[in-house]
Image (tube, rainbow, N blue to C red):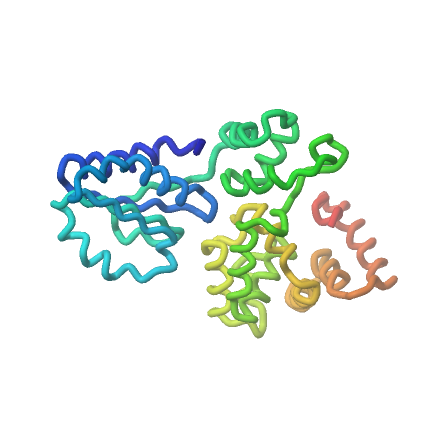
Length: 298
């Protein structure tokens, strides 16, 4: 059962009804990876089974449109308006100026219902934790639920904070990370090792050009600081150790004097050093004195 997508189902059904009435219709389904676009296309194909009784009726489903050149289809759409042809386009990107329904993240209550569909006996506290981590992404909910160990189900271990290694959603993130240029991966790594790093910090970093910053921000939908915690945590887990060290070292050279810089100086070293441990201790004391308990905990 595809939960939380009633509004999108209504929009898809309206397009199919237009075809049954002898007219054409087009709809873009836009959402993040794992939001349910492909499942909606699958449902639409099943709902349009009656089209087989009339050879004039056509349902065209285009999945992963963001990876395709749709110029040919966009050029043909005006000619299809008065023909019984339904065109459903699933994408993570542009809507091409066409009618669109967004697949927003599921709310918490719906996320918990999805988890209970998968694991009926899931403890309430664990269901809440997994729903929080998944951030309303249906595929993440499914893959996190299926990855739960007996120890996690029994409360002996905490719930997962990252997608499992063999997750299809994690594989997509891994592929996107690998596709970045070296400088863009370095820019992204800087944001992943420090939640306070924003685009302005990246732009001010010596040796990091604007093209690399733009490439990195595109991976997170041009909003690095607003990216879902699960995505950030999973990408962080995918970073090689050397990339994390390099990101810390760059931030240690870029940030002004203070606890954050000291922390990155220490974190950028392969092994702990007593001098840095002393600096970190002093920085933590100073941060607590200012009331900055987050910095002190770091």
